[in-house]
Length: 350
Ligand code: ADP
Ligand code: MG
Image 1 (cartoon, protein in one colour):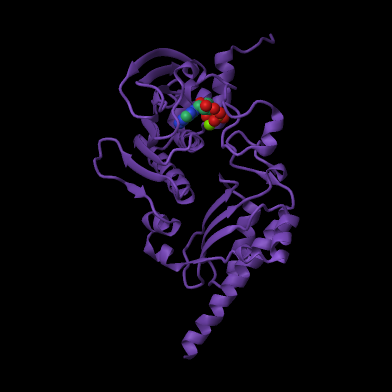
Image 2: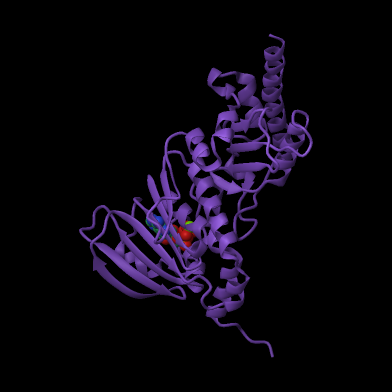
């Protein structure tokens, strides 16, 4: 018999697409903190984020009156109409993350606007607020997610905690490297020592996460637009790039058995297979076989050329002029590596 699924069931199914594991929830919480203009984000986890995931930010905070809608599906402060997607500058827009998370875990929020005398504390179950009270607290927001997948045991069983921990470390590392105006810290609950603190330049942050062998090998691909070279600017705009890409790449003396690609498009962490493949191909001309580079890339594509609404996790994006952009990046990397390679030869001859 055909019947309408209950809204709880619908929400649980939808939640499973957005929150595959703790790392997806963590990413959403970090993005919300950045959307709220935080300059400091502290992350605490337990059991790879499955038992506990806590993100504390010093951002704008949430108004007490907004708390009742906070975990309700399709409730957002970030867009009004579909048209707003064309000029989107925030990470969020669907109002689905907290709703999804609260359908598969216990969510507690402590938040305070600068203008409020006290913080509010609220608890959520299945998207609805279950408790709200005043308490002392700092400006900003702390979101605590406990017992992820407590109500979907088959999902819980499929998770490997060590694997979840690695993925959480990866999410904080990558966001922490890219967002260099935000200080990040990461520790495990009941472990007084920090796993890491990220502050300072991108290179400093890369050193903390990946070690000095990587950070010491990095070269910055020159950004020529500062010289106001008209031809460069028109090349960029012809292929839909709103500014020069930022690239920090390992030099030909560095290699690893696997590649690391950190790719942000319009400040969104994405996996972009065409870019990865093309750059690995460029490096293969400079590195021994089975040796791979480290690449950090931040691209800014005209928002109207970019579709972020491809997949619930927003990990994949589609954009116009993909082939031209991939070529442009390949040439940029090739030029940089070939210059280093020439000087490497000279060094030996000298
Ligand atoms: P979205 O980010 O797509 O709007 P979310 O479910 O992630 O949806 O968040 C819902 C709303 O809750 C946001 O639009 C924002 O207004 C508010 N919010 C969530 N996290 C924070 C935070 N850390 N600081 C301030 N506001 C927040
Ligand atoms: Mg969000």
